[in-house]
Structures are given as structure tokens and as C-alpha cells.
Image (tube, rainbow, N blue to C red; front, side):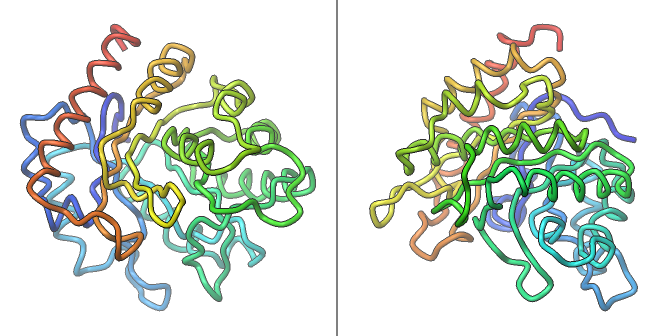
Length: 296
């Protein structure tokens, strides 16, 4: 099992293909986070890892420890759990790269359409029970701690009747699972939704269950602030990071997410400013980590 601790960069296709993951050797990177969906083989294939993607994964692993992150596992939809990509592909992938824990988005999804981007779960007491029981079963199958990432969403799921923070707290308490706190998602939801409060969310979730943090930047488009991962980390996110770091005793990892126009065709395109932007954000994250968690 690999050791993951400190500052990481998400090695998504923008970093690997458009910018070049080997251009960050002089940056304070302790590990890379890889998106499972980018590397796993189709469900109708006998391989776990896509043979075409395997050389890239191996090259990354030669330079850094790897941490697994899941987007489209379908684990919180209504298909039988053992038939979902989360169990059939993501769990063996986590074991293959020896990831010490794995995080997933709190999305709803199904076999009919797993790409349910930013479709949040219903924040209700009934869903706390259903989701937590599936999460506990999935954590058993993974064999490592399962972290839940708070989702960016454009609108609450119909029928939601409790705050997002209360929902997340209820799931981890019942399931015995953990949290990936995406601070940019918190910032974006606070920016877009009148009934959402970043301060209340951070005060409600159990910070002693936070194992990983995501930071990123976004873009205004069409009157909405979007979680596009395409801009410098906002000051409000840095403030939240400095607030949370000394209050999360089990925190192991802070990951910077940066991505080109994968979320929307009008997202800011990758250009020559991105490399210094990423290096600057990594350096600032490392400085805050050193200040707030000396000796960690």
C-alpha cells in the first residue's frame, strides 16, 4: 500500500496530454490523483485497466505515488451494487495501483447513463439511509477507506428537504465512511444558491472525517459560476483551506484540480498561462500546508 500525504495534482487528460505531467518536477507535488474512469477498460472487456492507457499509468507510477478517484461508478443509483462499475472496475483498479483510499462524487447514476455530471443526490433523511447502506457495502468491497466528495450542483434534486452538510454528515455517521471536502464546490454552491451557506456547511460536516481536500478555480458563464477547474484558486477557497487544515486531524491530502474545456465548450482554453498558474497554486497550497500542519 502506498503512502499518500501532502500536496497532489490531479493527473487528468489536460495535465497528461495538453500540458505534460513531466513539466512539474520543480513543483511541490507529493503524489498524483488519477481518475479511474480514464484508465479502466470497458465492462465487456476481460481487462481491468485499458491496455491502451496502461503505459501512461505505468509512467505516472514510476514518478509519483498514485491516488484513485472515482467519478462514474454508479454506486449511488438504483442498480444492484455488484453490477455497477464501482464494484466491477473501480474496486480492482484501486487494488491494482495500491491506493490507500478512494474518493467518489456524490452523484446519482445508472447503467442507462453513468455520465450524470453534477446531478446531486436528494438531500433527505430517507436518502441518508439508502446511500449510507450502499456506501458501507461498497467500502467493504473496496477494502480501503471510502471518501465521499461533496458535489457541485446546478439545482438541488427534487424532494431535498435537509441541508447538504447535514446529508453528508448523516451518511458518514451511518456508513462509517469518510469525506473528501471539495472546497471549490462549497464556494461555487455558496455563490450560486441563496439557501446554501459555506460557513454552515463547514460547521455541520464532521471535520474529523475529512481525509482529502480538493481545490480548484472556475468561471462565470451565462449568469452562473461553474466548477470548470480552469482558473486560479479563488481567495475564498484559500481562506477555507487555511481554516480547515488545522481542524481536520485525519487529513492526508490536498489535491489541485485543473482541466481544460472538458466540462463545457466555452470553458477557458488551455494556453501558455496555465503552467505558471498551476505552479503558483501548488506552491501556495504547500505553503499553507506547512504553516497549518507543521510536521505533518
